[in-house]
Image (tube, rainbow, N blue to C red):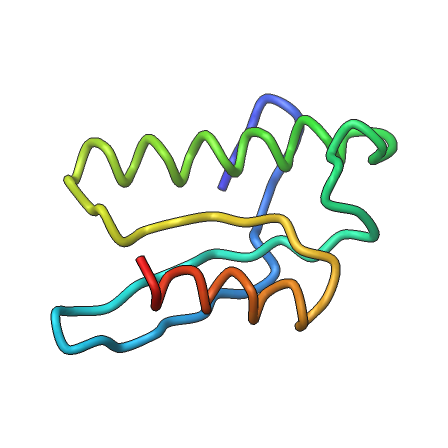
Length: 86
């Protein structure tokens, strides 16, 4: 997706199927979940990605579309576990 800071693509996405529907999460994998510590245009691109996911979810009424910055698969598992328990 285009941003004012250059092209941005989330690293990957996961989906958890639940009896009442799916929970979808776009993931950005970084060395830290603190985006303020990212160098160059990584922080503003990551923030722009978050805003894009939020805007799409709000405008389309998608309550199960989320975005998360994670450091590894363990972090992503935690995000998906939270989606299941929500």
